[in-house]
Amino acid sequence: MRRKVGDVSLTGDDRGEDTRRVGRLTTGELARRLGVAPTTIRSWDSRYGLGPSVRTGGRHRRWTAVDVARLERMCALTATGLPPAEAARLVLGEASPAVSESLAEPSAGAPAGAAPVPRVANRQRSRARTGFQLGDVRQECRGVARAALRLDAAALDELLGAAIEEHGLVAAWTEVIMPTLQAVGRKWESSGERYVEVEHFLSWHISGALRRHAPPVAAGRPGAVTVLACVPAENHTLPLEVLAAALAERSLPVRMFGGALPVESLVEAVRRTGPVAVGLWSQSRTTASRPLAQHVASMEWGVRGARRKPVVLLLGPGWAGQSAPGVQHPLSLAQAVMAVESVALR
Image (cartoon, rainbow, N blue to C red):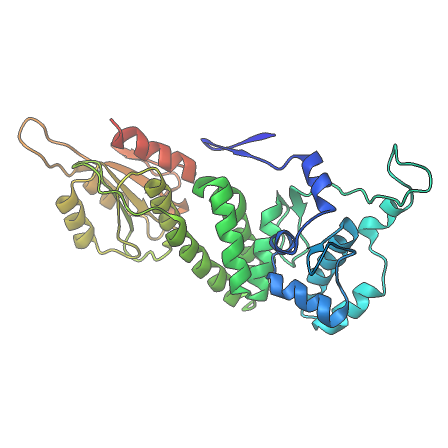
Protein backbone atom coordinates (compact mmCIF):
# COMPACT_ATOMS: atom_id res chain seq x y z
CA MET A 1 0.00 0.00 0.00
CA ARG A 2 1.46 3.32 -1.06
CA ARG A 3 0.95 6.50 0.91
CA LYS A 4 1.89 10.09 0.17
CA VAL A 5 3.14 12.59 2.73
CA GLY A 6 3.57 15.95 1.07
CA ASP A 7 6.01 15.22 -1.73
CA VAL A 8 7.40 12.11 -0.07
CA SER A 9 6.11 8.60 -0.74
CA LEU A 10 6.30 5.90 1.86
CA THR A 11 5.16 2.36 2.01
CA GLY A 12 2.70 1.56 4.79
CA ASP A 13 2.51 -1.84 6.43
CA ASP A 14 0.22 -4.18 4.57
CA ARG A 15 -2.78 -5.31 6.59
CA GLY A 16 -2.30 -8.95 5.68
CA GLU A 17 1.43 -8.85 6.36
CA ASP A 18 0.83 -7.34 9.82
CA THR A 19 -1.62 -10.13 10.62
CA ARG A 20 0.77 -12.84 9.49
CA ARG A 21 3.74 -11.47 11.45
CA VAL A 22 2.09 -11.14 14.85
CA GLY A 23 2.37 -14.86 15.55
CA ARG A 24 6.17 -14.77 15.18
CA LEU A 25 7.42 -11.47 16.56
CA THR A 26 10.86 -11.48 18.10
CA THR A 27 11.52 -9.70 21.38
CA GLY A 28 13.20 -6.82 19.56
CA GLU A 29 10.27 -6.39 17.16
CA LEU A 30 7.81 -6.50 20.05
CA ALA A 31 9.83 -3.91 21.98
CA ARG A 32 9.70 -1.50 19.04
CA ARG A 33 5.99 -2.14 18.69
CA LEU A 34 5.30 -1.37 22.37
CA GLY A 35 7.81 1.45 22.84
CA VAL A 36 9.81 -0.22 25.59
CA ALA A 37 13.34 -1.56 25.80
CA PRO A 38 13.89 -5.28 25.10
CA THR A 39 15.38 -5.62 28.60
CA THR A 40 12.05 -4.42 30.03
CA ILE A 41 10.17 -7.22 28.26
CA ARG A 42 12.70 -9.81 29.44
CA SER A 43 12.39 -8.46 32.98
CA TRP A 44 8.59 -8.77 32.90
CA ASP A 45 9.03 -12.34 31.69
CA SER A 46 11.50 -13.39 34.41
CA ARG A 47 9.92 -11.47 37.30
CA TYR A 48 6.19 -11.72 36.65
CA GLY A 49 5.72 -14.60 34.23
CA LEU A 50 4.61 -12.43 31.31
CA GLY A 51 6.55 -14.52 28.85
CA PRO A 52 5.82 -15.72 25.31
CA SER A 53 3.48 -18.57 24.53
CA VAL A 54 5.93 -19.97 21.99
CA ARG A 55 9.64 -20.60 22.40
CA THR A 56 11.92 -21.97 19.74
CA GLY A 57 15.17 -23.75 20.42
CA GLY A 58 17.39 -22.32 23.13
CA ARG A 59 16.39 -18.96 24.59
CA HIS A 60 14.68 -17.59 21.48
CA ARG A 61 11.24 -16.12 22.03
CA ARG A 62 8.32 -15.78 19.61
CA TRP A 63 5.37 -13.66 20.70
CA THR A 64 1.78 -14.46 19.65
CA ALA A 65 -1.21 -12.14 19.33
CA VAL A 66 -2.33 -13.13 22.84
CA ASP A 67 1.11 -12.22 24.21
CA VAL A 68 1.05 -8.87 22.41
CA ALA A 69 -2.38 -7.98 23.79
CA ARG A 70 -1.28 -8.92 27.30
CA LEU A 71 1.86 -6.78 27.16
CA GLU A 72 -0.05 -3.88 25.63
CA ARG A 73 -2.29 -4.03 28.70
CA MET A 74 0.82 -4.12 30.90
CA CYS A 75 2.16 -1.00 29.18
CA ALA A 76 -1.15 0.82 29.53
CA LEU A 77 -1.35 0.08 33.28
CA THR A 78 2.25 1.03 34.09
CA ALA A 79 1.91 4.22 32.03
CA THR A 80 -0.71 5.37 34.56
CA GLY A 81 1.87 5.03 37.37
CA LEU A 82 0.82 1.60 38.62
CA PRO A 83 3.82 -0.41 39.93
CA PRO A 84 4.87 -3.17 37.51
CA ALA A 85 4.23 -5.95 40.03
CA GLU A 86 0.66 -4.80 40.62
CA ALA A 87 0.08 -4.25 36.89
CA ALA A 88 1.33 -7.78 36.14
CA ARG A 89 -0.99 -9.24 38.78
CA LEU A 90 -3.95 -7.52 37.11
CA VAL A 91 -2.90 -8.56 33.61
CA LEU A 92 -2.48 -12.20 34.56
CA GLY A 93 -5.82 -12.21 36.38
CA GLU A 94 -7.95 -10.88 33.55
CA ALA A 95 -8.85 -12.05 30.05
CA SER A 96 -7.74 -9.70 27.32
CA PRO A 97 -10.80 -8.27 25.52
CA ALA A 98 -8.63 -7.70 22.45
CA VAL A 99 -8.24 -11.44 21.88
CA SER A 100 -11.13 -13.11 23.72
CA GLU A 101 -13.40 -13.03 20.66
CA SER A 102 -10.67 -14.38 18.40
CA LEU A 103 -10.28 -17.43 20.65
CA ALA A 104 -13.91 -18.44 20.22
CA GLU A 105 -13.48 -20.30 16.93
CA PRO A 106 -10.69 -21.68 14.73
CA SER A 107 -9.60 -19.91 11.58
CA ALA A 108 -11.50 -20.56 8.38
CA GLY A 109 -10.13 -23.59 6.60
CA ALA A 110 -8.43 -25.00 9.70
CA PRO A 111 -8.80 -28.75 10.26
CA ALA A 112 -11.40 -29.89 12.78
CA GLY A 113 -10.06 -29.86 16.33
CA ALA A 114 -7.23 -27.49 15.46
CA ALA A 115 -6.27 -24.88 18.01
CA PRO A 116 -7.88 -21.52 17.28
CA VAL A 117 -5.65 -18.91 15.65
CA PRO A 118 -6.19 -15.41 17.08
CA ARG A 119 -7.26 -12.79 14.56
CA VAL A 120 -5.38 -9.54 14.81
CA ALA A 121 -6.77 -6.21 13.65
CA ASN A 122 -4.72 -3.89 11.44
CA ARG A 123 -2.33 -2.03 13.75
CA GLN A 124 -0.69 0.27 11.22
CA ARG A 125 -2.74 3.14 12.63
CA SER A 126 -3.81 3.23 16.25
CA ARG A 127 -5.80 5.08 18.83
CA ALA A 128 -3.12 4.85 21.45
CA ARG A 129 -3.83 4.28 25.14
CA THR A 130 -0.93 6.23 26.50
CA GLY A 131 -2.70 8.97 28.46
CA PHE A 132 -2.13 11.31 25.52
CA GLN A 133 -4.88 12.22 23.04
CA LEU A 134 -3.15 10.96 19.91
CA GLY A 135 -6.25 10.22 17.84
CA ASP A 136 -5.95 8.22 14.62
CA VAL A 137 -2.20 8.18 14.06
CA ARG A 138 0.51 5.84 12.83
CA GLN A 139 1.40 2.84 14.98
CA GLU A 140 4.85 4.27 15.72
CA CYS A 141 3.32 7.26 17.56
CA ARG A 142 2.08 4.99 20.32
CA GLY A 143 5.53 3.57 20.93
CA VAL A 144 7.21 6.99 20.90
CA ALA A 145 4.60 8.41 23.31
CA ARG A 146 4.97 5.49 25.71
CA ALA A 147 8.74 5.69 25.70
CA ALA A 148 8.61 9.45 26.36
CA LEU A 149 6.08 9.00 29.17
CA ARG A 150 8.33 6.41 30.81
CA LEU A 151 11.40 8.63 30.29
CA ASP A 152 12.97 5.58 28.65
CA ALA A 153 15.93 7.08 26.78
CA ALA A 154 17.16 3.88 25.13
CA ALA A 155 13.74 2.89 23.77
CA LEU A 156 12.98 6.44 22.61
CA ASP A 157 16.26 6.73 20.70
CA GLU A 158 15.67 3.36 19.05
CA LEU A 159 12.10 4.20 18.02
CA LEU A 160 12.95 7.63 16.64
CA GLY A 161 15.91 6.24 14.72
CA ALA A 162 13.80 3.43 13.26
CA ALA A 163 11.10 5.87 12.11
CA ILE A 164 13.63 8.14 10.39
CA GLU A 165 15.44 5.25 8.71
CA GLU A 166 12.21 3.63 7.50
CA HIS A 167 10.29 6.68 6.30
CA GLY A 168 12.90 9.41 5.76
CA LEU A 169 13.11 12.64 7.74
CA VAL A 170 10.16 14.46 6.18
CA ALA A 171 7.67 11.60 6.56
CA ALA A 172 8.95 10.63 10.02
CA TRP A 173 8.52 14.22 11.22
CA THR A 174 5.09 14.69 9.63
CA GLU A 175 3.48 11.36 10.55
CA VAL A 176 5.30 10.21 13.70
CA ILE A 177 7.25 12.91 15.52
CA MET A 178 5.04 15.97 15.14
CA PRO A 179 1.74 14.25 16.09
CA THR A 180 3.40 12.91 19.24
CA LEU A 181 4.84 16.31 20.14
CA GLN A 182 1.44 17.91 19.64
CA ALA A 183 -0.21 15.31 21.88
CA VAL A 184 2.37 15.91 24.62
CA GLY A 185 1.82 19.66 24.30
CA ARG A 186 -1.95 19.26 24.63
CA LYS A 187 -1.49 17.06 27.70
CA TRP A 188 0.82 19.62 29.28
CA GLU A 189 -1.59 22.49 28.62
CA SER A 190 -4.52 20.59 30.14
CA SER A 191 -2.64 19.27 33.18
CA GLY A 192 -1.09 22.37 34.74
CA GLU A 193 2.60 21.80 35.41
CA ARG A 194 2.49 18.04 34.80
CA TYR A 195 4.27 16.42 31.83
CA VAL A 196 6.59 19.37 31.23
CA GLU A 197 9.49 17.01 31.81
CA VAL A 198 8.08 14.64 29.18
CA GLU A 199 7.95 17.41 26.56
CA HIS A 200 11.52 18.52 27.31
CA PHE A 201 12.74 14.91 27.34
CA LEU A 202 11.06 14.12 24.02
CA SER A 203 12.29 17.31 22.33
CA TRP A 204 15.88 16.69 23.45
CA HIS A 205 15.89 13.15 22.06
CA ILE A 206 14.28 14.24 18.78
CA SER A 207 17.03 16.83 18.37
CA GLY A 208 19.66 14.16 19.01
CA ALA A 209 18.04 11.75 16.56
CA LEU A 210 18.02 14.40 13.84
CA ARG A 211 21.72 15.05 14.31
CA ARG A 212 22.60 11.35 14.33
CA HIS A 213 20.66 10.43 11.22
CA ALA A 214 21.22 13.49 9.04
CA PRO A 215 24.21 13.24 6.67
CA PRO A 216 27.09 15.70 7.01
CA VAL A 217 26.33 19.22 5.80
CA ALA A 218 27.12 19.52 2.11
CA ALA A 219 29.81 21.99 1.06
CA GLY A 220 27.73 23.23 -1.87
CA ARG A 221 28.53 25.68 -4.59
CA PRO A 222 28.59 29.49 -4.04
CA GLY A 223 25.09 30.95 -3.95
CA ALA A 224 23.39 27.63 -3.13
CA VAL A 225 23.48 27.92 0.67
CA THR A 226 20.31 28.19 2.79
CA VAL A 227 20.44 30.20 6.03
CA LEU A 228 18.08 29.09 8.82
CA ALA A 229 17.49 31.13 11.97
CA CYS A 230 14.86 32.02 14.53
CA VAL A 231 13.82 35.66 14.58
CA PRO A 232 14.85 37.74 17.61
CA ALA A 233 13.10 36.66 20.85
CA GLU A 234 12.17 33.29 19.34
CA ASN A 235 13.76 30.13 20.73
CA HIS A 236 11.75 27.26 19.19
CA THR A 237 14.55 25.69 17.15
CA LEU A 238 13.31 22.11 16.69
CA PRO A 239 11.34 22.76 13.45
CA LEU A 240 14.42 24.45 11.98
CA GLU A 241 16.56 21.50 13.04
CA VAL A 242 14.36 19.05 11.14
CA LEU A 243 14.36 21.32 8.06
CA ALA A 244 18.15 21.57 8.22
CA ALA A 245 18.39 17.77 8.48
CA ALA A 246 15.95 17.26 5.58
CA LEU A 247 17.95 19.64 3.37
CA ALA A 248 21.21 17.91 4.31
CA GLU A 249 19.54 14.59 3.43
CA ARG A 250 19.13 16.03 -0.09
CA SER A 251 22.74 17.31 -0.21
CA LEU A 252 21.60 20.95 -0.02
CA PRO A 253 24.07 23.06 2.02
CA VAL A 254 22.69 24.75 5.14
CA ARG A 255 23.97 27.28 7.66
CA MET A 256 22.00 26.88 10.88
CA PHE A 257 22.03 29.74 13.43
CA GLY A 258 19.45 28.52 15.92
CA GLY A 259 17.41 30.55 18.38
CA ALA A 260 16.88 34.28 18.88
CA LEU A 261 19.44 35.55 16.38
CA PRO A 262 19.81 39.36 16.77
CA VAL A 263 18.86 41.45 13.75
CA GLU A 264 22.41 42.73 13.21
CA SER A 265 23.79 39.19 13.35
CA LEU A 266 21.18 37.88 10.93
CA VAL A 267 21.96 40.62 8.42
CA GLU A 268 25.70 39.96 8.75
CA ALA A 269 25.19 36.21 8.30
CA VAL A 270 23.20 36.80 5.10
CA ARG A 271 25.81 39.26 3.82
CA ARG A 272 28.70 36.86 4.48
CA THR A 273 27.10 33.72 3.02
CA GLY A 274 25.13 35.13 0.05
CA PRO A 275 22.41 32.50 0.45
CA VAL A 276 19.90 31.40 -2.15
CA ALA A 277 17.24 31.17 0.56
CA VAL A 278 16.74 32.39 4.13
CA GLY A 279 14.32 30.61 6.47
CA LEU A 280 13.02 32.65 9.40
CA TRP A 281 11.12 30.78 12.13
CA SER A 282 8.48 32.45 14.29
CA GLN A 283 6.25 30.51 16.66
CA SER A 284 4.19 33.51 17.80
CA ARG A 285 2.75 36.59 16.13
CA THR A 286 4.53 38.67 18.77
CA THR A 287 7.94 37.64 17.40
CA ALA A 288 7.15 37.78 13.67
CA SER A 289 8.55 40.94 12.08
CA ARG A 290 7.45 41.77 8.55
CA PRO A 291 9.93 44.68 8.24
CA LEU A 292 12.77 42.29 9.09
CA ALA A 293 11.64 39.79 6.45
CA GLN A 294 11.33 42.55 3.85
CA HIS A 295 14.78 43.90 4.68
CA VAL A 296 16.39 40.47 4.27
CA ALA A 297 14.49 39.90 1.01
CA SER A 298 15.83 43.22 -0.38
CA MET A 299 19.50 42.47 0.37
CA GLU A 300 21.69 42.10 -2.72
CA TRP A 301 25.17 40.81 -3.47
CA GLY A 302 27.28 39.85 -6.45
CA VAL A 303 28.98 41.75 -9.25
CA ARG A 304 27.32 44.64 -11.09
CA GLY A 305 24.88 43.34 -13.67
CA ALA A 306 24.49 40.00 -11.88
CA ARG A 307 23.15 41.03 -8.50
CA ARG A 308 21.18 38.46 -6.54
CA LYS A 309 18.62 38.46 -3.73
CA PRO A 310 17.61 35.60 -1.44
CA VAL A 311 14.18 34.00 -1.36
CA VAL A 312 12.87 34.48 2.18
CA LEU A 313 10.80 31.65 3.68
CA LEU A 314 8.47 32.66 6.50
CA LEU A 315 8.37 29.53 8.64
CA GLY A 316 6.06 28.84 11.56
CA PRO A 317 2.58 29.87 12.75
CA GLY A 318 3.73 33.34 13.82
CA TRP A 319 3.74 34.46 10.18
CA ALA A 320 0.10 33.54 9.52
CA GLY A 321 -1.55 36.08 7.22
CA GLN A 322 1.67 37.95 6.42
CA SER A 323 3.17 38.29 2.95
CA ALA A 324 5.57 40.55 1.08
CA PRO A 325 7.38 40.68 -2.31
CA GLY A 326 10.16 38.08 -2.55
CA VAL A 327 8.76 36.17 0.41
CA GLN A 328 7.16 32.72 0.57
CA HIS A 329 5.20 31.10 3.40
CA PRO A 330 5.42 27.28 3.19
CA LEU A 331 2.72 25.59 5.26
CA SER A 332 4.53 22.30 5.86
CA LEU A 333 7.99 20.80 6.08
CA ALA A 334 7.55 19.19 2.66
CA GLN A 335 6.63 22.53 1.11
CA ALA A 336 9.64 24.22 2.72
CA VAL A 337 11.98 21.57 1.33
CA MET A 338 10.44 21.93 -2.13
CA ALA A 339 10.79 25.72 -1.99
CA VAL A 340 14.50 25.49 -1.22
CA GLU A 341 15.07 22.81 -3.86
CA SER A 342 13.34 24.90 -6.51
CA VAL A 343 15.77 27.82 -6.08
CA ALA A 344 18.92 25.96 -5.01
CA LEU A 345 18.97 23.57 -7.96
CA ARG A 346 18.45 26.15 -10.71
